[in-house]
Length: 394
Image (cartoon, rainbow, N blue to C red; front, side, top):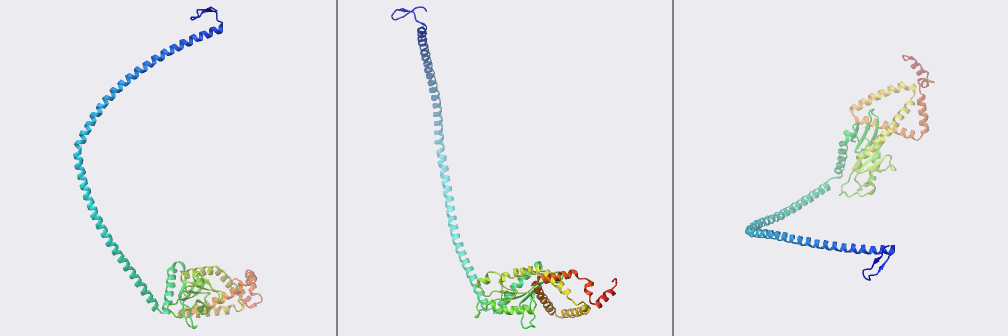
């Protein structure tokens, strides 16, 4: 390594590699710092110069804009001063129009309030008049009702039921018979008889109706039970299957107001209903009749099996004669024929009830029906056997 002379102490020395590197680093750091400081100074000077120029330029621009703004402000002030008079005139004119409109609206409001008061008064008087008219109408109805006899009240209920039925007769009961019971031969009669037939003229159901109402002013109040015995008698005499009392009696009774009341524990197939259940009652009993119609047909078939073949021709002649008589009677008096038919149906129903009580007998009879033949019918009856042999093709 070369010798290095210290600039301060003037002494010379030979550094090793580590010392030399340290000295070199020091020299470089000082040179770098010096160069850096010089450049920072130059940059700072340049920045200050640029700032001064920017400030001067900004000042110039602001002054120019300030002058422009001042000119615009002066112009606006002049325009405002010029338009103040126009504005004052416009405001005055607008206020005048507004005040005029206000006065008009005020007068209109006063007139509307007056009109509303008059209308309110008129409506109140009209309402009071309507109330008075309604009260008078109610009083007239009460007076008229008080003057009605018990018979007239009852006829009013009958008319309600008749009209209710006729309203749906064509659509719901086209083949039904519903007429007043005018046959008093037996000493009494119900109010109406209902009968419905199928396409083969077989009776589906028959009902004896009694309608009972009572005037509110009647001294002695009747009860529904007071009419059941007579209704049952009328039903049996006219050969009706069911009996129904349509009643407005005992109007506060929860039992009768609840719907259809079954009185079968007192009298068979008997019911008490309010007028609103009149049509539903007919529909229910008719549906039940449709279900039992098949049993009626089977009953007629079973009865036919018990005919004495020996007396077959005699019975046939008797039936023809009876039919002829009945036809003549029906031509003269239709109600008499209906009575005979009803009695025959009542007998059939009684036989039907007996058959229902013995399912085993019905089964045996049905089996016998399946085994019926000409041979079995003529067995032990030579007379009929000979007649069947004489028939063409026998």
